[in-house]
Image (cartoon, rainbow, N blue to C red; front, top):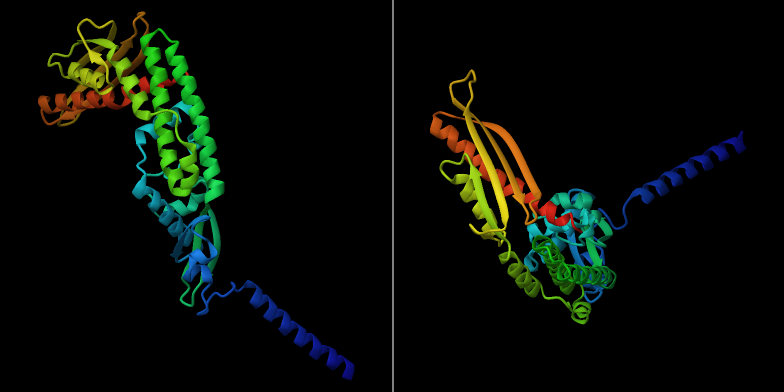
Length: 348
């Protein structure tokens, strides 16, 4: 019996010791104490500025702290690099892959949600240790390795430079004016993307950016495209547009694209508008509207077409008609423009 008591006592001691080990194992290192890690008080000592771009973050949870740290890095770029949403959209249309654009600013509204998909949003973003203070506040650090990340940018910029050269060569060998414009437009998109990437690379690794350089000037390509756009003269013809509002909207679209609206144009932008009364069981004046738009190239082919039918209601016939025209004009500004951009990308 004595031996049994000794064994029981030893088992009890071992059990207590095991529980202590488990408790220690699950407790974060230096967390919940006044002893903060060195990277929190002096991040440059652990993540030297010449090797890393690093920022601290804090929050009520690890994900919130990471989001805060990622947002701090994003803010550095947002203050120095302007990301053109039009360029980003066109680049996505051309490549067909949103992930093709290596950009740290893939969102225009950076907030705490960035931390949830930070690895997808940031190129080569990594996180260091985390620490919890006695109040339960979580701290962490996000960082970019300047050499590794810089090389990713360098390779993408060089690949885009090759693509720009290819597009400019195709434009040079193209005799059809609209197709030539399409290749120049795409080259300008790649040049715009490279400018964004280059400005970001200057933040990540300035020596690498200075050695890289850019063989193609965005402003030069922009000037060439503008010269080509002026050669595209378009005649606008609209049926059923008694007040000329749709004709004006189409001419504005032509001007905004850099083309020329001309009565002697060898391309046609034709549209037909129809607005009819619509009987509905309500207290409003209701109209049914239909619009058909087609861009005809120099060979007589319809290259971009858009048809839409909808209804508009108002407290008076004037209000209902104004609503119908407002919707049709917005259709030209947004939907027709998207279709035209898709047409330009179809040659690539």
